[in-house]
Length: 155
Length: 256
Length: 107
Image (tube, rainbow over all chains, first blue to last red; front, side, top):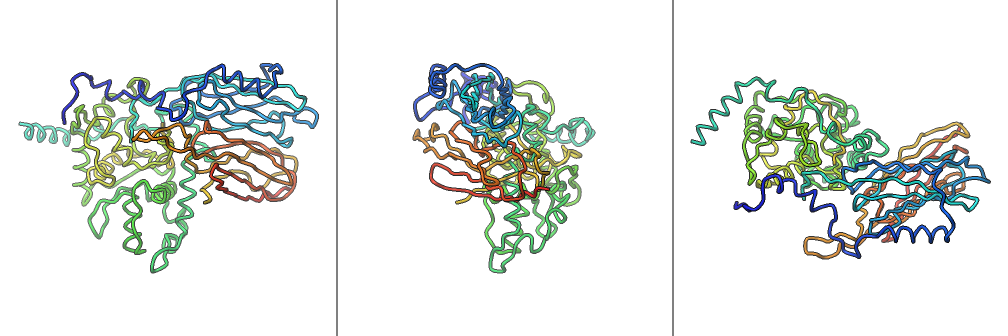
């Protein structure tokens, strides 16, 4: 098997980091922070979003952007009068800005926690917006650095 | 010259204490994953590999073939009959003399005792049954036989492990014995232990067999990627199981 | 065709107790943004909705987008109200529906 004299050993074995962070996209490329801001504005009909009451937990460093563990907890007594109705998770870099929408039941219990795994196309900020029963919106965010294994295999 | 060198090296390898050849202490691949990946593996409600264990449990009971047999028909409850089995595989089949891994044993049963077709590697069915059977040995320390009929396979596996291969001319041990724990770009090199397989690999977004991972290793050093079930990989699988003696079976594993 | 699922929830709970439910469904969640090795777009194939009902009401609903990882995993909490069936329904963008049922005994 002939080799390519231009590459050294490390760059062939570990080419993954450079190549694979942004796989070729079939549709339009990534979203932008502006698109995320638009999506949030559409959700709240322009109402102010207050930072707080929403704790979004994501790893600081994700080993693989294909599957990143997410946990979101909303501070709420979950009474009929004061409860969280929905939690929206937004990405600023993925091709589709909305990652998932959770509709929370009044029976979820105090300070409900929701769990899922998301895909992240690149290192970015993820924002969670909670829509409360009184019409207010609260937010939490987390930043994730998305790495990829040095020996990704293509197999 | 190379033959002589290989012979000398082989001699040296045999005479070198087994303790030197195997990493001390042996550390599972799990130790080299991120905290989140370890947590995912440890939570049976979140571990995606459990989907294949569930499917395997259903396949275990499935009746098939002209004699209308199922795994459960002969082996009854897998939790009883399969406990500890995966911990001693790969093993030599007493009748045919072939070295069988769990996939091979499952397919041998299917062909010879159920008279149905073998499941291909990486089919959901084979992954599911392999994951399910291996899962019954979760927590059981690995101990394979490398004596008697297993000896030639063991030696072949050891030779494969020690041989420089591929365009990059690397032997497995150069990364996994000499440099485990060190960084390869953003990654930390593992010892290459296999007690966590079959595993859900984040990169593949699905469950995969050990052979799929070995093929990826071959690709990684730009060596010839051998077939699933190739005798070289089977022999290597035995050697690696010996190399990781004492490590507990983890199936289903989660790896990046 | 119904997909393999994994559901972890207690078999019983005390009335009023809040408990956690974890669910996974086997699904490739093909995002529609990848190309195959000929350069052709791989069509999107994703779960779009996940609904859980119990004791006469939706106790959890997720609107699912391509940004949810393959083999979608959801965890949530709910309150034990009465002995009854908990019904889990996943729907994907081809109209395939997977339904699972579990019984919860409330003491």
